[in-house]
Every structure is written in structure tokens, then in C-alpha cells.
Image 1 (cartoon, rainbow over the protein chains, first blue to last red):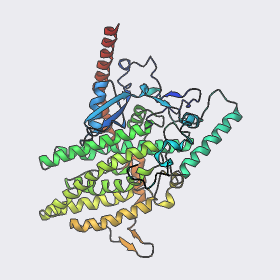
Image 2 (image 1 turned 30 degrees about the vertical axis):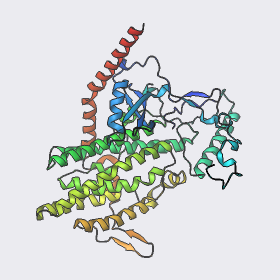
Image 3 (image 1 turned 60 degrees about the horizontal axis):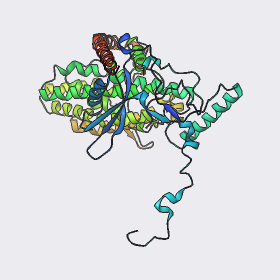
Length: 127
Length: 343
């Protein structure tokens, strides 16, 4: 799940935490423009009770209430959900795709964390 | 975030791990590393995601294709929206409204996917309204009768599905994901069109004639939706190499013709093409000649409805301006209130 990224801003390796979307400039308050500054929201939908919310896509909306309504109309026209989360895209922190090596290094070579590592118990029932 | 902060397609794509301002040599090395990583992902038939390094031409090609696709969905609402008020029954009205609403949704999914490449939706919409952007030539033909709603669903959406199913595996992640969603919803579009034609075909002789007439008019434009013949499609080779395009224009067109041959029999109608045949040697369906001059003319803006479609889009955009402004103003006011309360 990697929603939006700004190709203008290179993913920096200086920090492992990155904002997915470019931050709004303070000057660009919605009301000051002609409605063209609707923010970007990421939409997460719970498809049925007992399941977690899953990223469905994104949309533009002026505020959270409208984002929810738009999300309902855009992503649940066929009963695809029983619950929706909307999150401002720039509130999502993500790992740096270029730091793949170092950031996700720890589990590498640690096969013993998986049950399949232990083969001597093969054939033994209920184990 | 403010959408206008997004820049247009950068000429120089972001290099991976570009930390401090690197010397030209370092930059070149990063480019090379990025290219190598990109090439490996493509050769493994894996997916490129928004923040990966990608060649500038890849970004540009995708942005053009996805935005044109989005525009097609948005403009594509018009021929059918025109018929909502004249649909023959409440059921047909409801179905047509659901379909037009889907087209709007598909346009939005695709604008979202295009935005991940670095262009704002507002910019894309402005380009469409200014007549700078292209969309599928098919929507510049008029929908003259109720039977056209059937022919559009059956032939036009049918051709679109044929084109779109392989795009679910396009190498660019957000595009593929948008297409999966779209394809799931699109099959209802084709079936409802087929049903309209079937009902007309089993109706009075005049109704059957109306259905046949609609099929006659939409057949060739639908076949041209797959794009120019392979030997006249300069971008296809690169798109195929990048795993954006999985099958050639002619290959998909041939498959589509084969499907239509079967289905038109069930409809009790005929295709307006005496040269349709299955070539035993190539194992492919063949069709009669298509008027590619007409295709180019329509694409260049000189089709029967180009100016009407664009004018309607412009008008809808202008008519909706006050809603967008009011919603933004309300949101601003509410956020001010929240701030006051917090202070």
C-alpha cells in the first residue's frame, strides 16, 4: 500500500520516516482559492465485520465529513463496506522505499522464526 | 496537502537515495542504479510503485495514457446521461443512472492513479476543458436512439473490457489496481446493453430495425477503439517492453471480433461486416477494412460531437463551481471554529 508520492521530492535516505504526500503550503488555505485546493484523503474500507480496514484508494475533499461521504459514493456503491476510514494523505508516515535494505534487514536470515524451520517434528501428530 | 503543489511531469526523475546535492558523476551513478533497479522489477514482471525511481519517458507515457483514460470515462458519461430522462421505464432509468455514476467513479479512480505520477487532478481537468487533452474517439459519436444505449453497452463497453482486462496487470501498481476495480464494475455495463438489444430484437419489426441500425453505426467505431493497426502504432512497442501493454491493438481487436460474432447470433442481429471470418492459418478472427482517416479526424477534434462534448464538460464544470467553493468555504470556517475552541 503505497498511496501517493511526490516525484519532485526524492525519497531521502537521511531519514526512515517520510510523508507520503507533499505538505500543503500554509498559504494555500482552501477558502482562499476557488475551491481548487481540496486536500487528498486516503480511504480505508472494512468490507465486513471481523475484517480489518483495507486501503481502497484516494479522493479529494474539503473536509473529513465530505471525504467520508465521497468515499461512500466512490468506493462502496455495491455494498463493499460496512465501515470507512478517511485519513489526510499527508498525515501518513511511510518507510522510505529506497531504504529497503537496511530498514527491513532484521528478519533476513532468521528462518528460525518460522515453524517450517523445524523439520525434525515432521510426522509427529498435533505439532 | 494542496494539489497545486504537485508539479507537472518532471523531466528529471527523482534519483534513489539522493541525499546531499551530488556531483554530476554521483548523479549519473544514482540514475544508473535507479535504471538497473527499474529494469530488474520489469524483467521480474513485478510492479513499479509511485515512489520508485522510473525513467522519465515511462512516467510521461503512463501519465498520458492514464489521464486520457480518465478523461474518456468523464466524457463518456455524456452520450448516456442524455438518455436518462428518455429511458423507457423506471428500471432502465435507474440502471442508466447507476452506469453513468460508475463512469464518474472510474474517472476518479484513474485521476487518482495519474496523480501519483505527479500531476494534480485540477491540472488534468483544466487541460481537458481547454481542449489540450485527448480522450477516446468513440465518445464523439452521437447517441441517436434508445437502441444506441444497447449498442454502446454491448459494443463500446465490450471493447473497453477487452482492452482493460490485460491492463489489470500493467506494471504500474496504481494503474493496475484502478483497472481491477473498474473491470469488476464494467461487466454489468456490457450485460445491460446486451439486454437492451435483445429486448428490442425480440420486439416489433421497427424495434428490431432500430437495434440493427444502432449496431451498424457503433460496430466500426468500437473496433477502432483498440487503436491504430500495429504497423501504425509507434508507441506500442515501448509500452509492451515496459509491461504496460500486454497485447497488440490488432490482437485485441481480433479477439473482440470473435466474441461479437458469437454474441450477435444470440441477439438475432448481424454485424455490418461481410468480411468477418476466422483465418484457419493464423487462428485469428479477421474483419473488413476500417476507415482510419475518420479515426484520425475524430481524434484531431473534427468528429461529429467533439465540440458539443467539450462544451458540455466546460458548462458542467462552471455550473459546479459554486458547490466547490461553498464546500471549501464551509470547511475553512469549521476548521477556524475548531481552532478557536482549542485556543
